[in-house]
Image (cartoon, rainbow, N blue to C red):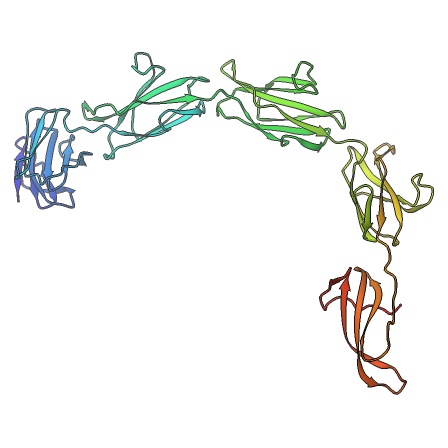
Length: 451
């Protein structure tokens, strides 16, 4: 035992080792109230409620008659052996090597502010303030003001916990805030004063992405609320980038998306949104744009006027507005009088096999619900020429070239014959190597047929 202290005839404390024990019946029974994890040496009290204990590297305090103890945020640099309090605010702690520590605020430490970060900007109108303290169960007083001297308070609240959500802020406003901890009837010093600025309320547009093309003529526009507290939104849609002439204007949208119908096909639209909070509009969002689907398909591939196309060609085109199906025509003339392909399908691509060395014209028509067809412009492409056959170059135990084709395309082939002559006078082929367009093909290529 290092120290014993009674604050009245019933309540007393004993400091021994790393423990603080308490009695409430004049010493007949004792209860451990705190374990320090280090040597404790002395205790001083003021009144019945407050007491301070010093030790090897810490100072702990109670303000509830010893029921709970909290280590103070100040960490002494010396081994403390004695303490003494003049009143509830002024206390001293001593070390054997001559160092003296003093507090004039009862040993109360100010909380540390955590978030939002000091001088942060573009904060939502619903913001979470948080702070930290070494103590666990004490309440805190929080103040928020639009001026740094806190003359006019937007919030002055005492609460438990170490965070608070504020939802009464205004657009484009700067706020200052601070926190102090409550110890019984005493308050710690105020924390640092931090500030943050709220957003201008400009929503973040989400969908369709900016510069989108082939957007359906019935589409949903969506955005994100950066204020977290918008009462409604205003959306404007225009074919004019200055929004002088509006195709759509709705100022009582209750959610962050809206479906727009009956847009013109193949038309460039601009759109923007702003939020309304407490009858005050925030700033407009950035301006985005999109182009709606055309009734006529746009050809995509193969590219117009391309030469050397593979004979197994895949035709691709864009989706057309209100199209139920597509009519695809491939012809050897630009008037489409002699069609090689004339098919109706529901997808926007078609695979077909054509002849070598031929120029083809193609187009696609979108057929809508009433049976009307909207034709694309026509494009042309030319397939690769067939390779001339040069077989055989020689007969015998040598290498020679052979040309042929299979479902993968056109090939040059190389064969080697063995020296054994069969009864019919022919030689047997043992190994075959293939080259596709003069490039080596792996051995899993399909064998060529003699031409």
